[in-house]
Length: 145
Image (tube, rainbow, N blue to C red; front, side, top):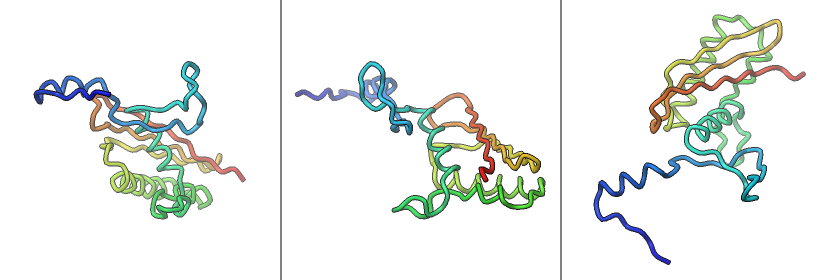
């Protein structure tokens, strides 16, 4: 078994462009149709999945990391006063991303509360540190009961 080593820094930079920088298992755990292995998300898709998991996880849900998550769903059961709730959720999400996701630079967060349907729509515009374009993540939280 041989290992290819770069002889210069420029050769390393060229070979590193083709690799996946961020990689996570796809949370559906469905096998890849060609290889039969568990499929994975890479780069921007991996970061989007991590952000979604961060927003949808409540504190103390993760066994060995009780501070992970944000308890965003708790606002669904409050009397929604749109201005105050959306401002508080936005601040909370910004802090949560800043503390838990170093790969992301938040550009804008838009939170819309719909009291009649008991749902909160969160749109996050962000940039991944390794990508050139801005990305959007749209999540709608709604009350099940």
